[in-house]
Image 1: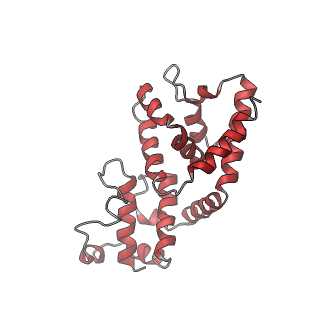
Image 2: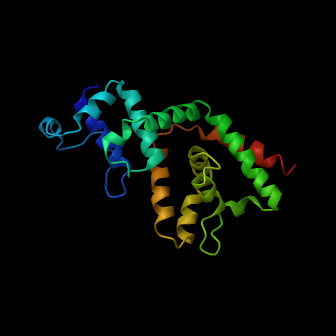
Image 3: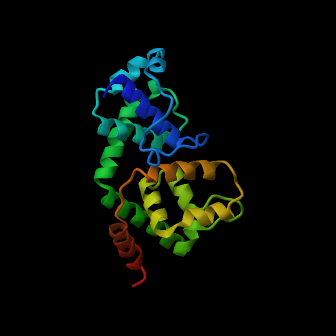
Length: 207
């Protein structure tokens, strides 16, 4: 990948995650208009794009996605992504994706134990009470479960739309949910497999 290609890919992923941009990576197939080589050559941070461009395009796309999914679009400078911290984010992301079924089941068991210990019904996870964020959202914000677990559960149950309708808070939930929704588009999830795992965890406590 050339430095210029690395630059264009970075802009496409950043705009996909940005709340202030009306851009979808998949709708436009990762393409951007009005991005010229001259504009790139005039940048003082070309070194970072060229350094990251040493990866192949598939790896670089995953690297960008992993970091924007972790940090959100607040990561706007490429220098922030050329760091040990960002590399660690990517490595941890790779490990999660490779073990996603295991992590999903482990997270669900912890959620289930939380509910049982407090005598709560499953649906309480998604309730908005006294203007507080629902339990499931607090879990992912506090990293008690992985973001992928939250996304998979939402894909199966569709609870985020209900939360959006019920919650009055107008910054944290909307912006974070937008990030999760945008990240979800990059995940190739087999719903049937995860539905089976979910039923196995939660149905076991009702038998």
